[in-house]
Length: 124
Image 1: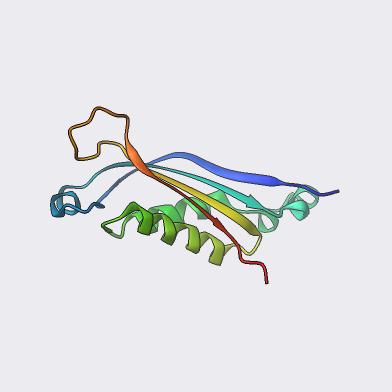
Image 2 (image 1 turned 60 degrees about the vertical axis):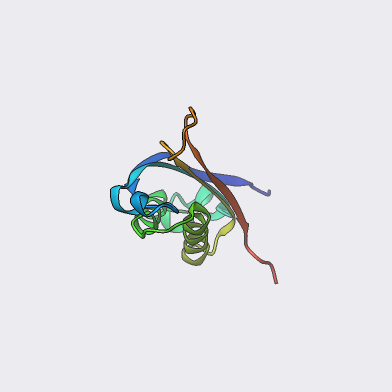
């Protein structure tokens, strides 16, 4: 039997210091991060062992660690998060990282602005 499994974190709320404008990296702002990883976890279905799956507590730690490093672009932060997940968990096949800046610094009225990055493990 073949399993396709997605493991996710929803609405991880953080305060961080990202932005092109210098003031954003001084004052900071609120961000919401969502992760969705596609992974091979057939062993975990049988074993009931966290070692055989993707530990979402570790996923959360990676998000917190990478969001704490100020960057100009959310694309850069999302790439760091995605790459760190792929490096940490060999079972991951695909990663989707969605980062939303809750109050972007422009005159528009919106619920946020951000990026959604998808990374696939290179098969070779």
